[in-house]
Image 1 (cartoon, rainbow, N blue to C red):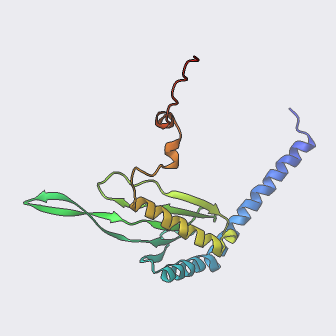
Image 2: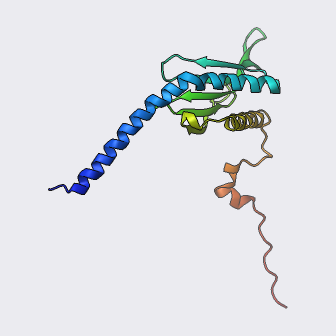
Image 3: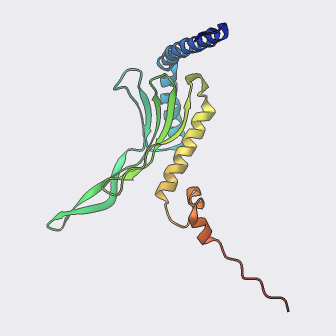
Length: 189
């Protein structure tokens, strides 16, 4: 088997692309540490204060270069309780949801929403990924859009009922059974 010069050039381009990606990881991490995490903290704090949203905004830095900025609505008693004996009830705790800006292993930023959940009342839903960004792509309009999406999703979770069709419910066999069936044609006279 012989390799052509074109084969070697293709391989060389792939190696150059690999080196570029590795260089980008270093740049993304530096950008996060230099300014982005501070900017996200300030912008989320400012936006929450402006809208009078009761929340906390904090940095989580358990692992270097996998840090996160989290806007959390905290936790509270859910109003539900389980019996523990002698007429006593233990309150079930509700996690109220959070908006997370998580630095990934490659320096890009994952934006996700953790929906509320009540302990012992089903399983928490998996986080909803909004998008993954290169750090320089995150501009103020994106943050406002993320906050609006977060509040809409949290509000929809709190206001859940079965009268509102979820877009996912429109797909599949259920749609066929919910449609009105047309009346059979009348025979000609």
